[in-house]
Image: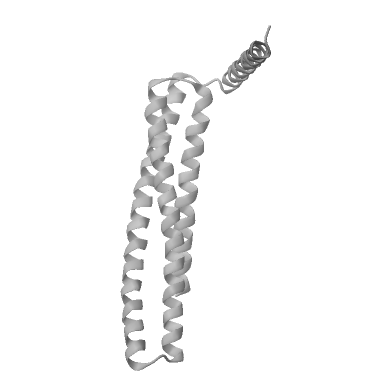
Length: 167
């Protein structure tokens, strides 16, 4: 027997063993979860509701922060034009710095809103997949993606509220 055939045989045996272990693991987990079809459907509809809510919240936050950024960029252009025409002063420099920090903070919130939208879309796609099949082990993946979307939206809302109440 050649070395290639031996290595292929060993690899094939390892793959069979690992797939057998995975099947046994998934079977054990499914037995532990023990969800009936009504609980499964309720869980899926709950996840879908949360995912669509987080998608709408993410879009709203994204729209709000992009509008804030656009407004502040216009104000920053006006400040720099005034500074070039009239000369820089300490007050104008502080205003420019504050505008740049504001834009940076809003960009961070915008990025997190985009992540929340992505996680919500992922959750919705997983819902569509899991609605047609009934693997109880994979429902945790759906729950995880919903939790990620909720966490990103919560972080965005917290930062927006923190910015609002600081003013």
